[in-house]
Length: 237
Ligand SMILES: [Zn+2]
Image 1 (cartoon, rainbow, N blue to C red):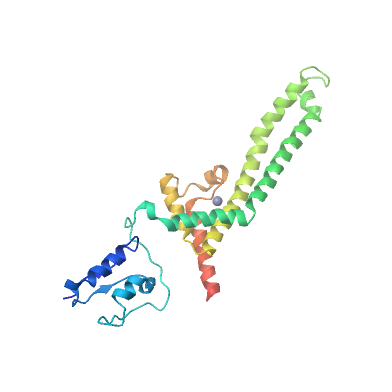
Image 2 (image 1 turned 45 degrees about the horizontal axis):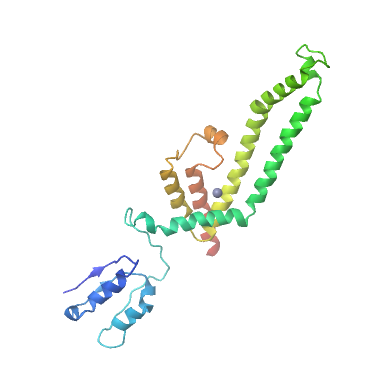
């Protein structure tokens, strides 16, 4: 009789318990088959119980290529989902290593420059008040100039700036995603999980996302990560 044919959970002491069970005196003469990562064969309890050069003579079957192990959906509780967390941490470290904080600081300073520059233009252009029928030195001009400045800045300058800013920040996000992929993480599944948790729109209209969203939509990021992964594997070959 073949005793356990098992793919145990690898966390905690599950594997050790299973091995103890398979090699216990009452199961001593029953063969068993275990499917697990090869690092377990170097564990002391494994060597002692199974591969001790005495009664048991185990044999091993291993894939030639390193394989990727995926837990079936729902097979792992959320608390142990380290890989997804690691991928996100890899992404954030990517931001830091690629100096995105400095890039954003520069862009913010650019924004301040645009703000003060356009304010200056309005303050030093008399036609802003004269074209409304006011004379150049009237009291209350300062208010009118500020009013015009705020209207134009809010309705024309900022929207254009926002679009440029979104386009820029997106490039940083893609770069950080690539960094996580280079580290060997599956950033796509983390992004998917974040999007599901946040109830985000997976694939918004391009015009909407172009104007409103600083981060690229999920589909674009997953596609980009996949494409980058493909070029990486091509390079490795
Ligand atoms: Zn990011």
